[in-house]
Image: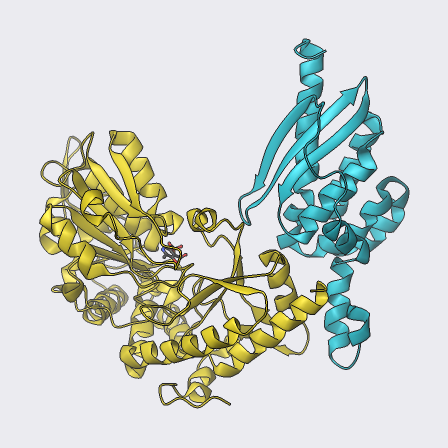
Amino acid sequence: MAAEHREGREVSTEMQLESMYQEIILDHYRHPHHKGLREPFASQVHHVNPTCGDEVTMRVDLKGDVISDISYESQGCSISQASASVMADLLIGKSVEQAREVQETFLRLMQSKLDGPEFAEEHEEVLEDAVAFAGVAKYPGRVKCALLSWMAWKDATAQALDDTESGVKA
Amino acid sequence: MVVNSQFLDTDAIRKDFPILQRTVHGDKPLVYLDNAATSQSPQQVIDSIVEYYSLHNANVHRGIHVLAEEATALYEGARDKVAAFINAGAREEVVFTKNSSEALNLVANVLGWAEAPYGIRPGDEIVISEMEHHSNIVPWQLTAERIGAKLRWFGITDEGRLDLSNVNELINERTKVVSLVHVSNILGTVNPVETIVKRAHEVGALVVLDASQSAPHLPLDVQALGADFVAFTGHKMLGPTGVGVLWGRRDLLEELPPFLGGGEMIQTVTMEKSTYAGLPHKYEAGTPPISEVIALGTAVDYLNGIGMDKVAAHEHAITEYALGRLQDVEGLRIIGPATNEDRGAAISFVLGDIHPHDVGQVLDEHGIAVRVGHHCARPVCVRFGIPATTRASFYLYSTPAEVDALIVGLDQVKRFFGV
Ligand SMILES: Cc1ncc(COP(=O)(O)O)c(C=O)c1O
């Protein structure tokens, strides 16, 4: 698509954009994974990004200390949609501890400003497909979009663990 | 090139605005279409701030030295300019605030605190509309909650106009105040102030007008409008941030209690009790934004130099052109009036399924500045069942070529996202 138009002055603009809108992001945006709320679930949260109106309802299910399912319903821009999809792919099946490491590393990636690409390369093993978001880090206006579902997941998981500990849900 | 006799000489005007000469993202000329969020300032306005701090800086109303007198004269001179600009009956009716939001909060608070007959009491009704900026929703919610008054609102028609079908039921004997946006910042709608004022005054309700998007763009005559309070903000009318205006009818401002307490707003202070200064100082506690007020006066001079009727005609012509071109973009849906009658120069739209955030990002990469989101008017987005819009908004320096750039940009957006 965009590659066909790499000529003249267009080159720099399209390349700039592609540094943020990696093909992986656009694919997940067009065909999101794990979208649509599923049962069973241990907890559900609703998060919004008040500056742009992006919203996500996130469900997490646990089996022991393994994230057995993540499902969500959401509306928002390509970055926030793709981020939810990539995250669900990555975290389902991981232990809570492993998943937290991924989440924390992703958060650091989003805080890395212009160093996104180097940071992503260094932590590729942990981040896997989420390295595609490295280019987003230099757009402060979009970092919140990328983080929305990750923050919702963190919150939902904390609630699920609390409930398990207090014995509300077995 | 589009020729329309209504257009201003934008080549000449743009030379006054240094920011319009700059490029972004390397070599792209800036196409600034975010004027409803904030406008740019001409060199004259910028110079007046520099000149104030270089030559006249002092606190106002507080000294007998030369600088204090000069600063006071400049500050009060700006009040005269603003009063004339909106055809206020008296200069004392012009109160400087921080912005529109503070002006609206002022009114919502003092009406909450006031004695009869103006004070809002439990069970009284406050009427706003679904197309208000959050700055004209939240202050009234706060007052209504505190007092136990009822907040009600006008709906919006599918066309993006105020739904007047139930005006006589909505504004009734229990209504204490009607607070309405003059020109919507998200839909572009110009509301029928006359109809609302007539009905509100019939039942003894006060009318507050949020003129944030009208004062900068069309001739505003507060006496002819007939409202009781009018609020607007300096940074949307070529002025700096940090200064807004509340115009209020003198008899009301005299009667109502003060808003903020402090220096300047008092007559005498004892440890037990104070008496308050006369208008307008009663509502200007503390050191005001002096350089900002003076620069706002310069912005008013600049607008007068062009002529507000000519500014309005120019924007009307640009909006006409933009509406036509946007409607030719496949998959684009305008949110708000699609025709140019009773319409301001802000146009919101959605482009297929592409999220406005993504639209704005690609446009920005091409040097085109628009606003995306809910524009501090979230209930409008909810009303139209959309998460957000992209908004292009014009001003006296906007050109048809910038509209053309936007159209090209939108094609690039569609191409980028593969639609
Ligand atoms: C219609 C309307 N009302 C109120 C405001 C608030 O203005 P300010 O942020 O300067 O207080 C704005 C602008 O943001 C506006 O467009």
